[in-house]
Length: 319
Picture 1 (tube, rainbow, N blue to C red):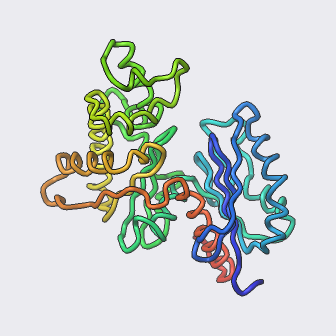
Picture 2 (picture 1 turned 135 degrees about the vertical axis):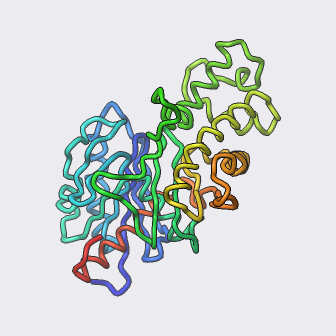
């Protein structure tokens, strides 16, 4: 074993595949990024890894691999429960397959991507020096992760921080239906259908999809419809995060995922709305921050997880 082992991080999502090389401090030194074709399913992603991973393991003398997967996983076995976006993953033994693909005995750590991002931000990003750290990703779905004392909190199997499925009312409306990227896309499309005058409508493409990317630009122009969408989305999210605050008492809530690229307007809107839903004794906290690593939160978390897995195996312990 090399005195300063190198680690590989693998992010497997519904739209992208990333493989990174990094050191024990989770500093990324090399990256390969691939587009994911949903039509090719899990087989297509596995083919991309087959063409990439073995050479990287050999070239960099990888000490361990860490994987952040876009869906629920069985972390104890490394087997995938399912992917909600890519077919062909359900029940797949990802840990066993990667161990074989590496071509040499290499520890493999497999975790849900939101948990992985939470670990990355808690270790080196917006959560450094704060504990507990709660991370919420706002993208094609809404996911969460909680890190306590430097370790991901899982709860009883199969418990995870599924904030996207927290109900906002008794009718069953969930956070994902109000705060995900696709929910914001749909809200913007309805503006045009309802005849609302907005820059968002003027800029919208004829082909539906990805309308949320217009929001930051419209907010910069003080578009009233864009401001209303921002505030309503932030209020729904803050209401859900009030439950997190009452139950887990994090010192910081970190906003990540594609919608978090709205930046300060989103952070301020959530931080402003949250106190309205929190009991008086908890006023003044938690802090609300933007993810420090943006789209790198998952791969950096993968490197941290790989390092922890190697350390655990050397010590003969488990997470």
